[in-house]
Amino acid sequence: MTRFFLGAPVALLALASCAGAPSPGRVTPPRVSPGVVPVLASASSSASARLSRKERVQRILPHNVRLQVVEGDSVRRSASGVVVGSEQGPEGVVAWVVTNAHAVVMSDVKAPVLRVLVDRRSEVETHVGQVVATGKVPELDLALVKVPGLALPAVELAEEAELELGEDVVVAASPFGRALSLSGGMVSQVEWDRESSRPKSVKTDAPIGYGASGGGVYSLESGRLLAIVEGYRTAQVDFAVREESYSFDVPMPGETFAAPSTKVRDFLHAKGFGHILRHSLPGEGGVAHAAGR
Image (cartoon, rainbow, N blue to C red; front, top):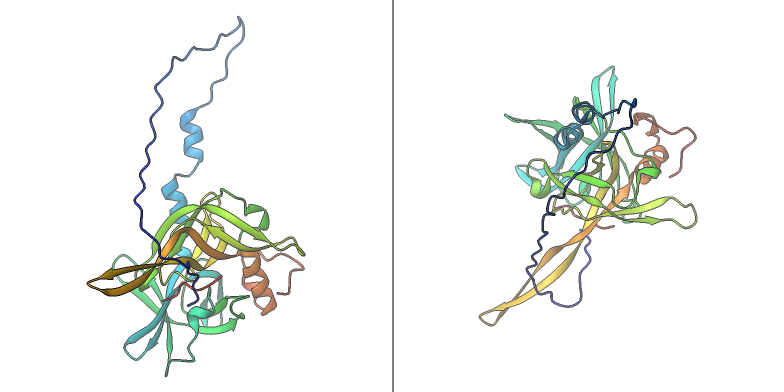
């Protein structure tokens, strides 16, 4: 896993903030001219037409899985993934999962098995996946996994226009190899390619942890996939205990990096899998660091 480190030791500071609630002001009812019937908006009808935050998050959950590279009884590596395609073929249902290329490297493992796990309330559903396409790390840290027998709905990839600073997002991933975990934040930075004028990197302030590589960054408003988590920046903290020096890495808030949906879409088209997307754009083709454990 590639990480960024700060050169100097970091001191941990506790910050506190508070906001005073505004005092209620006096509301003066509007004047109505004679013969004019005021039209009042129905708060209940408008509220029922919109999904609650919980309902919007619930739409995101079914697209996510966790991955394990297993050697015998030992889990050598864990990561996260997003279902970007689902097909019904002669052999039954097949799901297509996008994750990070660095997370599914198995050259250092003898007789590796790639497990794809879906966490239910009462059980864990286990499948075996096969890596069918990988990009070149670090320029294109993406991989596609074929999972026979996995029946999950495919996510819809967001368009470039949806990548706006301040967009509310939810990151769904499985840090530390555990069950699905959610974190919230916003799009804090979009890096644009000057030649193509297309997004090449996304940053969010939503916190993640080891094993979140390949997790999905979703628009809370639309439920579409904005990006795939690639990793995060860390700071090195040094301290001494009884004349012994110790150090550890701390994730830096607001420094989660991800590959935008544009890059995911181009990767799938370049590898010949553009047809698996729910909404492939006609004529598309062609063609950050690690947080995996």
